[in-house]
Image (cartoon, rainbow, N blue to C red):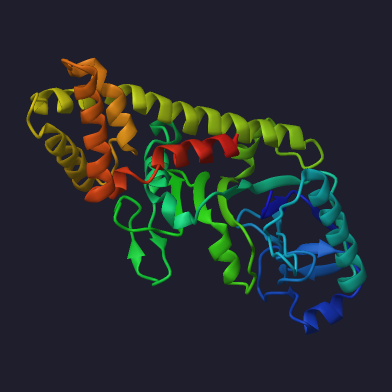
Length: 355
């Protein structure tokens, strides 16, 4: 896990009330109908910015008169920033340290007995064989194939140039791919971790890709993980959720796509196949044009076309079959290199490493 937020805690005592007001940590608004009363003191809001133990701490009254508190925490390793994430146990230790820090530094006593997760970033970071930019076609397809049942909507992303782009523009090579659900309770992000670390002046040896699932809201976390209780959630539950998500929404989605696109691919071959004619060029051009028009690859690699030849073409000799295969490969290595970059193998590489 990377960044998290928790809620459900209770501030039970405050020692340095006047000092915290002077420091702007406690605010007391005039003519407010209700106040939080702690240790005999009236409080409107407690707000603490980023410290070495948490990103922010917030405690206030809701518009309905209830008390609401939220604390955000994230990883901030000086050597590698957040390249290496925390386990559940490590985050629990960090929460306990934050509790002690609030008491020692600010005189704020917090009861954490009933805390629950309000947002969770769950991710897996893998080492990929080539630079992230070389995986644009497989990643574009992977994001497109995320099932409709997730109700995900594509969002703009920002590249190095800070020019807003769309993931569906296959000519672009983004550093981040992202989708978020209609109700903003789930987001999926795939990004170039190696490039992101450079923003923190951290240079690493390998090419890192991060696949990140963020769950927003205690209800969504409970629905997906079986609990949102900080003391009940385990690493096994998180790992099982991630594995099943990749299996069902990435692997199975891609497998189904390959099965379903078979008839369309065979139709293209059949319509263009004419023995002793330069039909292979027409097949490749039609497939390439479809990708340009749709912003989505029908096939990732020329070998996926070759696998369909026997199902459509009636080769008179073994040599004619060999010649067709060779011609397709040579044309791709020449003018249609996009189909000769082993993108199919790259897709399998990502899926296998994520699983």
